[in-house]
Image 1 (cartoon, rainbow, N blue to C red):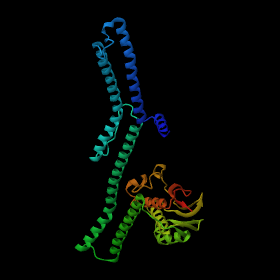
Image 2 (cartoon, helix red, strand yellow):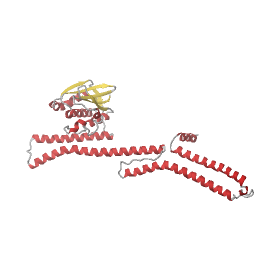
Image 3 (spheres, one colour):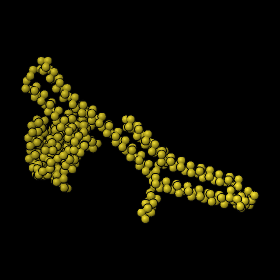
Image 4 (cartoon, one colour):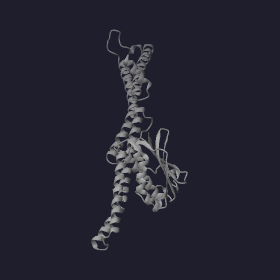
Length: 362
């Protein structure tokens, strides 16, 4: 019963198993019909026109004419079997050979190799080619991202290291005189390197799925106040007026990571936003707790909103070379939101700029 069910399932499918079964069945039926009908026609012809060519009734050996028919029918059956086998093997082996050839190229470092097939491939072969090409595309994309990341990290590290080296060399050569202002400048560069390394660590942990958080009942208003005390002098010096809109006082989150996300959003505003009102708010909607930072401009094009949370992306307006920042801040924000099983996005702000929003389940 089980075997019958398996055969029915195979027959209803459109893949390799059905193709083999149907080809073998059709081949056997064709050869049987050819032998039966051909033998009937052959012996009818001999009986009517060449009765002397038939073997004697008391002889068990075929006559020469009958030997000829046996040889001809065997050769025709063999030719049909070879023809069917060649056609079937081509449909099976051509995509497999294509995958094997492309796989060797990938193993040799050519990640642009793609498998292809000529003609109509079977379902399993088509799926194999599709899966292989998807794997090759992903490997190529990973390689390109790795090259991009290496270049971007080297670029971000080069500037502070160059400054540190130059000033330390100046101190060593006596060009600069040691004073508190110089040491403060060197310390700023070291702190910048520390933040860059920490941002890279968070983004790397998030992409590998190892960014762990410690959820606890948190006074969100207190955490926001703590961050603002550290950032308020810098923001006010740049001309920003802080506006608090705290509708949600307590939530369940990782307070350290949420402070980190808020700090990244404020630094992003400090680097890229137009001085003016800067609103920090909290809210609860649709089962999500949200933290928002809204600036007064200049805003983001819709095309930039789709990629601004990617690492080392600064948006089209930052391509003029005057914008600062590592391009990792918003990637850190998204990583922290994802670790909370939440989301990070941006949209048009009522203040005329951009509203960055981090949401997580309450």
